[in-house]
Image (cartoon, rainbow, N blue to C red; front, top):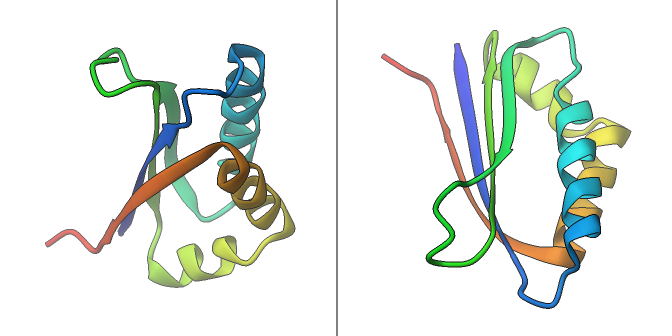
Length: 94
């Protein structure tokens, strides 16, 4: 199993409709054979601004490595780079 969690801090000048489009695109990126679970949501805690949470579990690291170079993932990365900064946590649970 391989875990992939990303916190996207959306820039303050980004309009709400653009955030909705980004969330939809991130959800679509989770449609991949090697993914066991995938969840994308806007954080309920807005004290530090709008944060999109992406929480994915892959079958294994190899599945993650295959997924991360897909066109869909690369396109989502470009969109997110235009509207946010992010922090990634990747690990293999014990």
